[in-house]
Every structure is written in structure tokens, then in C-alpha cells.
Amino acid sequence: MFNLRVHADRVSAGAPGAEGVFYSQRTGGPHYRWRRDAGGLGQWHFTRLHPAEWNPKVLFPFNQKNVPAALQARLAEHYMW
Picture (cartoon, rainbow, N blue to C red):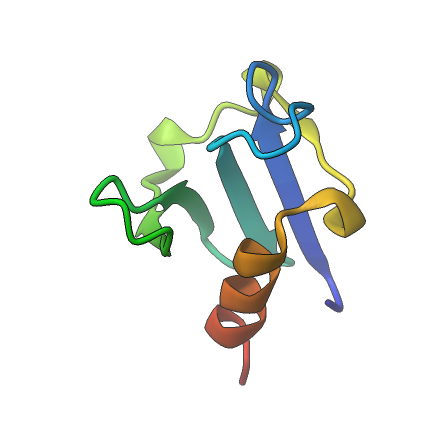
């Protein structure tokens, strides 16, 4: 996706199939935290972060090609204009 940055926490990002927590931001826009639904449905839900909650020092940029397919679909849906 154009101008979209994805970050992940160091613990879960590299493990295939890991639940993980991902963060996204489109240039100039707010940051979002993405988590898989804890109810077992496997859906990804987001929370808009307050600027004080954004701490890139504990995250690292994540290649969008490695983002789980279901999350890629949700990101595309979320950022569709």
C-alpha cells in the first residue's frame, strides 16, 4: 500500500503464525495498534493510539510482505479511501 508503514514488536514479529501485535501509519496520519481477536474468531481489530503511546524505540519496521494475509486484507480495507 502506498505510504503505509508497518511496525511490529520484537517478540512476536518474526514467528510464523504468531499472534503478534502490529502497528500501522499512513504518512501524516494517526498510528494504529492491530491485535488478533481474543475471542477465537481470528479477526484483526485496531485501536487508534494517542501520540504519547507511540514509542518507535521498542518497535522495528516490518516488511509488508511478511504481514499475515488476514491482517493485510484488514489494512487494505482500513486504509481504503
